[in-house]
Length: 119
Image (cartoon, rainbow, N blue to C red; front, side):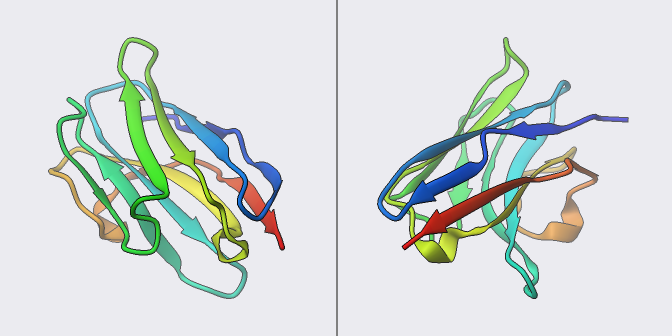
């Protein structure tokens, strides 16, 4: 069983930045998803265990960067130029398969961290 713990969420003004962290051990492909109130949980970004390949949702390309430090068992999501529409609960997820952007492909999930962007 993989335990995932997110941190780094909070309240920020539009145009600001936040960095989310996810503590996770093991050789997993990692992903970030987000869920706004009343909406589906959507893909944000994913990274392979080696960090050699990443993928992003179109809505965050150029603003968000996923990275990982395997020595620290931590995955990061650096978010800049935040917009009110980025407001959501952000979830860290892990999968044993190849890189992917489908929610059902991820086997393990964290509890989520709230990100609120004010206008």
